[in-house]
Image (cartoon, rainbow, N blue to C red; front, side, top):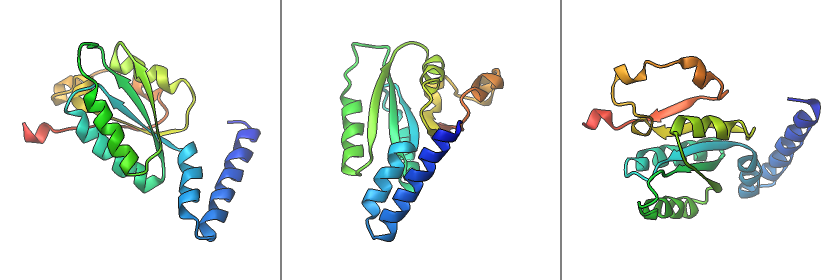
Length: 160
């Protein structure tokens, strides 16, 4: 990160602090959430709902917006689930942006992260990565280190 980017971040933080001190909490949150993002990866499956709920909770806690990477390789599948998730984000007042991808979930995440956005977390349902047991998690961990942020796997495995 260069000095210009650090100065810009400092100015944004100071602006948010000024709004917060004046009691304008919504304006302060908006300034912060425009910079800080949670990457929510959705695949159009019903299991995405767990990841959506987690992303909403974490974004509210850290005052972050949500970047949605929607990877639906089955074009026949209705995107009504996505529309429902977006409606929930709107009602909760969370800033979001949707980017569509196709192909491997893992490669799409890595490709998205190369864009250099200020992503704090990647949130994805573990089933979307094909992880259903501890055995499935044995892969090259260095590949995920390239993301430069935590990957949060939301799972419903305890229920099955």
